[in-house]
Image (cartoon, rainbow over all chains, first blue to last red; front, top):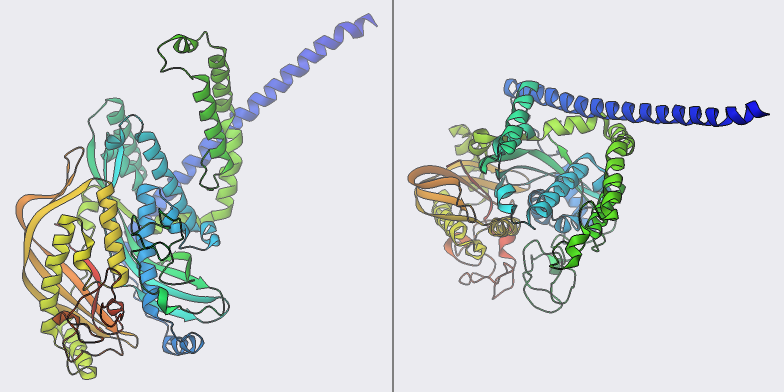
Length: 299
Length: 295
């Protein structure tokens, strides 16, 4: 009886030690695994990017043409929707690309939210846009209160796009259209260690990744003055638009209106999604067409 | 917490809650009286903050690892392929690769393209488009310097006009300014195509002058400078394949292609007389793309 009373605290203490040891082990293992996964992803991405760059230099760009059935598809669409205008879809594609650029530069997702379908955010491209916009918001939030915004700015500098091209059209349920567009965007980065940061974001080999990381860190730790660098992103993309079956184009909304149709006052900005006075939602000139997915053409 | 209805992931909500708790624990930091004295090691809330911070720091992999693994399983190889397919560059490569103009096609193709368009539309004159491109290039320049998109309303398609306007707004918001003067010294058609849907003509304009982009708050030069330079711009005009040159000359002659009246558009791009949407490309040529080579 006495032995049991003495042994219980010892057992309990031993049990607690074992429990702590297990927790320590789990925490250590999770740290190690997290580092391994993140570094592995970074290495894989960098190596893959380098391989792709080398392949791009070796092979000429892929040239594809519109679906040969397009005139027939257009005829079918126009029979179902007499006011259908493919130019509105091209306009939508141009605007969608610019709005993606704006979201990534400023972090403001409002404009793109009303152009896309909810499933867009589950696509790979949608997730990427959301993450980039979130990063931009974090940069702005961190930068503004103490006046350091100018030291860490990413400035939207330029955006150029080719003429969008209608590739195919499916007047089914839902209706689908695919628009091809090439565009290039340029941002300037003003920050201490800007060169290193920009190089890290675009590294194509492990050596360049390690070098740029070291450069960015040393410049930051040395308190180097804000430097300037540029980041560009370009490519050719297919934008898939959808709208519900039976939808029809309303010719009265085909204009990009500068004034609110409810109260008549001017919209604050081209990217404004609602009237800032009466809060009425701004109609889109392309009706119910919404961006459902973006795919890279040379994939 | 944001009140705009945006749904943040759980990880971000936790971080926001932790930030809010930290701020609450350090309330009074800016006060001039006793409130300021509540900060530091004497404040029990500071200790709670430190313990919570250390716990979060130590335990964060347990939280983030499943998220990373689930995300990795969801996107898989596709995510990586997309990640590398998006072509990004930095430094001078980014600076000088952005806006590189497409190569010139074979002159034979150009002649054939012009002949095909002229076959469908006997009133088509390539020269009218090159002259119009020169004017358009000058107006785009003025628009960039002044930050006013409305100067380009009469020749840009609705989609291009909206993106141009939005870009000018983004640049103004970021305090990016543009100064300079330049003029077109040469313009020639470099590509002409006709498809079942549309006609397209690309005009290359050579410009001379100076252009200087700077960041207002820091005064940093972003591109260009006050020195004279020469660069080219590609202006692509398009119209519906069914459209033909109006008898009045249409938009290049500053006439409404729909009713023939003198060109007077409202801010939405419709003719003030006939209310036709003349910048949609269904009646006449409109500018659908403007690209400037690195300068």
